[in-house]
Image (tube, rainbow, N blue to C red):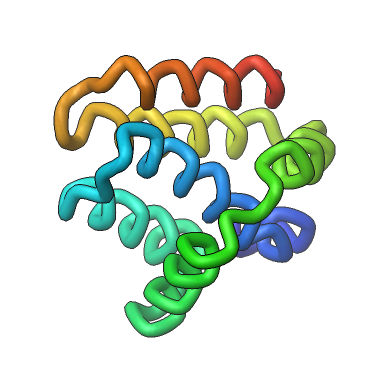
Length: 115
């Protein structure tokens, strides 16, 4: 996604959606944090300090989810493969530490708004 200008500019939006899944059950597990880190390392080539700063930003601010969903929905219009790949990362966040219905519910809301 780093090579697609419009998606590269939406790192915080991606982080907000990942955060929404991660925090749905009220706990940020080590495995969920690893999945968050993996996404930003592989998709955007961020270093650990940049990833940590992004995580702390969304953790403290808990940005408006609806706003970020709209931004990503518009950006993904021309990039269906990247949208599918992102949904796969969201799913990985859910299953990495055991499926919780609250996380799955958040995933369904996000999926319904992006598709």
